[in-house]
Image (tube, rainbow, N blue to C red; front, side):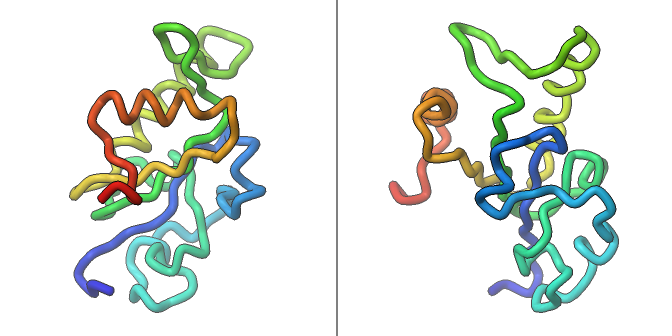
Length: 136
């Protein structure tokens, strides 16, 4: 473990399928503790015990976030299709992922569920140059 590097789990507040994988965002997470506590502290980001949402991480960065890609935004044909009932809801969802994808200083890791309807997401990332961890 690098004491001078910070990593942690982040995901969309609207994801519904990640909680089965231990990535349930905490609405009232202690964000200051998540970012500032010693890496060995159970409430610190590096302990990987707490997942924060786009609300908790907005304006803050870690060295290497682990982004849980939820089922609230999907790729269909040639565009992102976010869940939502209004244009504002959908635009907000796209912006939420923009926030998540820009929280890493050194890069990011994306956790994509190992289910059939999410394999297109993995392909999109791979086509843009993102490498699988097991390929490194």
